[in-house]
Amino acid sequence: MTRKTMELEILRYRPEKEERPTFETYEIPFKEEWVVLDAINYIKDNIDGSLSYRWSCRMGVCGSCGMMLNGIPKLSCAVFLRDYYPDKVRVEPLTGFPIQRDLVIVMDDFIHKLKEIKPWIIRDEGQEQSLEEGEYLQSPAELAAFKQYSMCINCMLCYAACPVYAIDNSFVGPAAIALAQRYNLDSRDHGRELRQDVIASNEGVWECTFVGECSEVCPKDVDPAGAIQRGKVSGTIDYFKDVLMPWGG
Amino acid sequence: MKPYVREYPNTWWLSRRPYFLFMVREFTAVFVAAYCVFLIYFVYKLSQGPDAYYGVIELLRSPLSIILHIIAFIFAIYHSITWFNLTPKIFILRFGEEQVPPFLISGANFIAWVVVSAIVAWIILVV
View 1 (tube, rainbow over the protein chains, first blue to last red):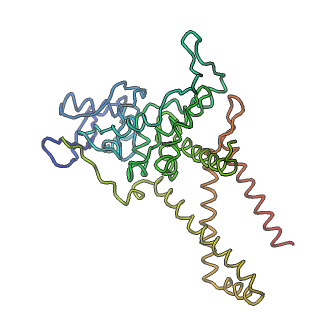
View 2 (cartoon, chains in turn brown, cyan; view 1 turned 90 degrees about the vertical axis):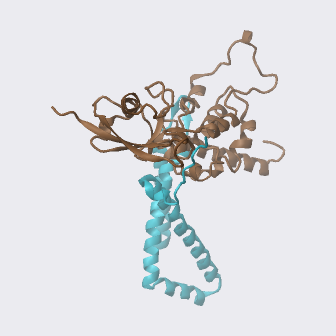
């Protein structure tokens, strides 16, 4: 029996010896049960140990192994080789981010944006409960209002799918806005006003043109596109309230 | 060592079908807007008296105008359908823990569309 093989074409960038990235093709054994990440691990272990990429959990939880597979952002641990076999798979680092090395991107911008939207529960002054007073209670309906948006694993696939971010990375972007929405919709949180400075700004929800691909590629069904559009609606309501009821409604 | 910034080509919208369909959706808005401008012009002509009004009607009967109308109509339909299909993402209605199914939200828009179109058709054709 001949051994089945297939090819992976990987974008390599070795800043110590080359000016720009180039594609290199690797032949790997094809196994029915292998995901793309298994194949990349095979290359690292058996063909070229210098190949750099991020990965950790291998089960779609950590969000580290996001890559462009044939031009579409995916978690490489969640796509089987058999979905491509016998065709070649083109593997590139996530679009829209600078490349540090090979498949490793520079994610500083995303981390900065995450921090900007204050992704934690903010209480009004005097409303903080001490540990002795116990947790803030919440009904199942109140949990359901934001739960979907809390599933984000910060894998950045949505940023890689977003042409707006690729063209102008001042855009706050899908995951950060979805996460802001997650806290804004949380009954325990009072921080919406504070987040609006970033969310309702020109670089916030209004930069989005609703391409919608962020939600399509999300491995956790977070629907960041929906979160952004809802942000536009509530931002507009805020504006009209301000104009029509300047004394505060 | 300097990180490498890849160029994002201007042809990005041709690289994948969903991007292309997005551009088509955006582009069809031009025709919807142009038709609105035409309607305003039409009302303006109406205010100028019967001669001006019939002048526009005559213009509308030309083959070129009919072709342009068919194109604008197809694009307006495409624009409406794609946007109505997106409404469930924007408008999320919840009753307690349950969310109203998305198809009911878009469905309500389509029904309203049919009803309004029928009323307009009735006014034009019957009244």
